[in-house]
Amino acid sequence: MSRTSLLDQEVARAMSALSAAAKKGLGDPVLAELVMIRASQINHCAFCLDMHLRIARENGESEDRLHLLNAWEEAEDLYTERERAALALTEAVTVLTDGFVPDEVYEQAAKHFDEAGLAHLIGLITAINGWNRLMVSRRIPPGGYQP
Image 1: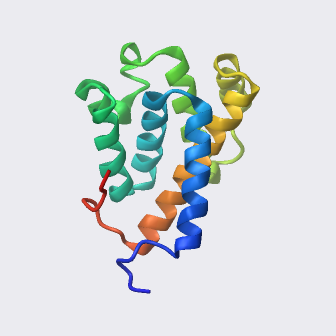
Image 2: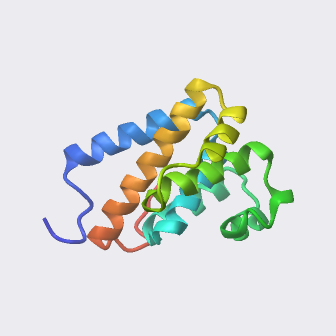
């Protein structure tokens, strides 16, 4: 398989199924895109950033919120409490090398998501981190996303 080919089809189908189930269960496509963009920013995944920024715009996300997502804690008036809780959890799960997800981050997310919603949110964060690692390690360049 060449470096520029995406993945083995079986792996791609499994990853896509996980992503779709988590996103569907979350029930908020705008929040899902914010989560996937933020994880992709942390992981430096240009392909996923390009793709999820396009999808977020298609879903009506504002340019201000997209431009300031990397500094969401300072731009707190642009994001709801629920979104901020999801973004904090996204960062904690994405950067597990710093240790466990802090209790206060998990508890804040649990205030805004029921048990199923929290499971889907963590599933989505896990899926996008997997995609980021696959795309970055395969050196898949941005611009190849086709809706």
